[in-house]
Image (tube, rainbow, N blue to C red; front, side, top):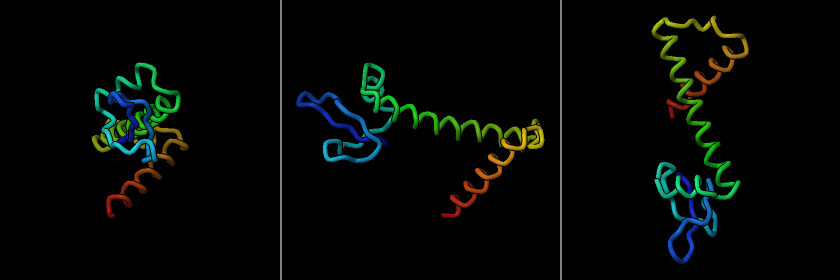
Length: 101
């Protein structure tokens, strides 16, 4: 979810990640109107916030893909360099902890 501000015509003028005094309307990041705002010259902050969210989602997707490949035996955890293994194991641990809440 993102929060947006609108002008008197109802056009999005600002997008932020958290509610702000001038941006209280919640909107899904997949909303075509929000995507158009970002793609058609939204502020640098709006573009950065949208891109950062996209990056985080992409990381989760890649992490899920790696786990599927490992689970199916198509790739071994030991195939990855030590720093990558450590990050994967740390994230697995964090996700397991999060799943308990």
